[in-house]
Length: 270
Image (cartoon, rainbow, N blue to C red; front, top):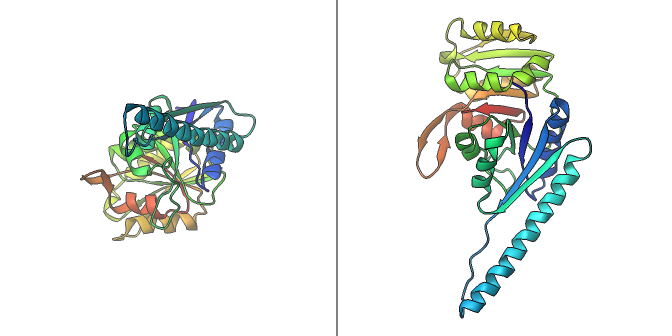
């Protein structure tokens, strides 16, 4: 596959320009269009005296939200820069719901990491987890202070599952162009021969690839991150696995470790 349209979440947080620059750089690299998306709910009128007052409050609230969305658009266009085709999609509504809807016409969705202690980007911001679960598209999770992505050295965190297979297929544009790809399995996930089979498959696509079996570890996420850092990788590719659904999708294990803590960009599929 190729990337024809890359969708990026746009907000007014401090990380937004770096995230948009990552997405814009990939759009230039792959000859793709770049779509920025933002949404903000309109507050309901409060302490309404009569119908006229309700209308006045609603109009005022809409104007205030529209000004915020226009500010996000200006920030998006500034960070995207020149040399890339851009589109802008904004609406009054929930930011996560809007991004999930816009993902229907995207090949890749770019969001920021939102672990404990990370910046709260405000009402325009989105959590990666719901986008990953509900968007039906691969997502690229960008950690803080990363403003570009070469994907020169890539680690595929391999587990023989439908999610991991989808992630490998979604990442093919990166994997074919990488200087080196490591297909790594850990502990119980290291089904004999599966990583070697995937490495062979990627080699047929022209990737410079090798298979690695890491020592068994109870903390698979940390093992993958340590291995990626030793390899000087700038991209991790992996499937995402959910454990339960309560009020929203909640991840556990490796997926949560990467979503919350990875200092490396991560391409994930569910």
